[in-house]
Structures are given as C-alpha cells and as structure tokens.
Length: 245
Image 1 (cartoon, rainbow, N blue to C red):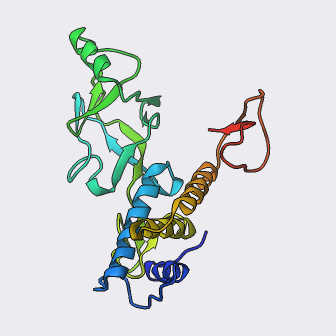
Image 2 (cartoon, rainbow, N blue to C red; image 1 turned 90 degrees about the vertical axis):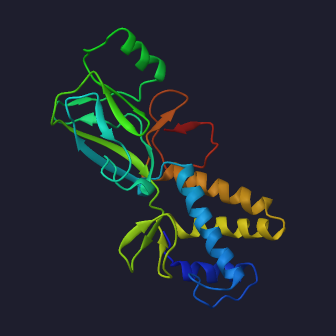
Image 3 (cartoon, rainbow, N blue to C red; image 1 turned 180 degrees about the horizontal axis):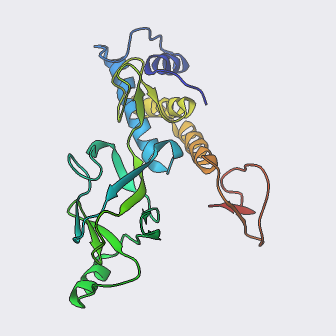
C-alpha cells in the first residue's frame, strides 16, 4: 500500500489534472489548493464509511453495573469517550468475557417494549439496545462483568506531527489510514465533477477498485455457490461462481 502525505497527494493529483501545485496545502490561501484539501477530506470520509475496513475497526470494553442503564454510550465520560471517532457498532461482536456468553442485539424497539409489557426479567443471555445515546441491557446484568465489542471508527487520517488520529487532514504531513492510491483516484473524479468536466468513467473505475479492495481487506471466508468450500486466490467483485462473506 502506497503511503503519501497530504502535501504529496495534492501535488500528485494536481499534476494528473494539469496543475502545478508546490505550496503546502494545509492553511493555504489559494482557493484551488484549499478545494483540493476539502475534496481529500470528503473522499476519506465517504470511502471510510462505505465499507467495514479492518484499519478502521477498533475494540472497546466496559464493566457492567447491576442496572438496566449501563450509561452514556458515546461522549465524554461515556463508554466511547471520543464521540467524533465513533461511526457504528459492529453487530454480533458484543461478548461478556467474564461470564463467557454473548450479549445479543441490538434488540428491536418492538421486542424491547414487549419485554417491558410482559415484565421480562430473566433469560439465558442479556440483550442490548442503544436509545437516546444510552446503552441498555435486558435483563439486568450482574455487576463488574467485562464486556467487549468492536466498532467502526472515523479515524480516517493519521497526523504524525501530533501523533493523533482524526477525521480530516490537519497538518501537511497527515496521511490517510486507507490506501493513498485509492484516495487520490477518488479525488481526481471529484475534482473533475466540481469543475464541470466529464468524470463518469473515472468514478466508475474508482468505485470498482474500492469495492474490490474492500472485498480483499483482511481476508474473507469463501463459500462456493456450487456447494462445499472453495479454495483459491482473490477475485473481482461480481464473479458469480463464488461469494466472499
């Protein structure tokens, strides 16, 4: 995977569309350079949230309390303290490692209200739901159990000067977490669209390449539609012979 800073990427994409850009992009007063930076921020956000990328998958943990409301889910003092880093919780990953059983969910509103109406207080495993940014468990769990789960983050950019991750490029040495070539490819068609040029073919190629990269990201289990297990190398999206899950 190619790794380039935002300064290098702006310069590279500029040359590809016929522009000579030598100024540092972050903080530039040049409207054209500033537009490139915004297009890069848009591209890392849209590509980063379109698929479940392994580089943007993180693990969180908390300890239960013996009440239904486990506390604020996202925000200062919550289970996930940095609100702007959270995208979504990954289904079927929440487990009670103390009790060694899954925490099912998220349960539906209908199911939750039915349990309340029926005074449901016991069950083999708890279920969770997130309502009004509060994490709720039913039935009430035992206290001090270690709960782990995975979530997709919005840490699209690494800022080495600050040794921080964020959603946007904040320094000229910032680098995207995802593949730089894919990000530059996306910015190229976005720039053409913003300028009123033909961009459909570049967009189509970019979306295929991103989809293929996501299908190979971190490996996938392979199931054969013909039955049994299929063993082989990577293949492009749209091949009807096998499906990767």
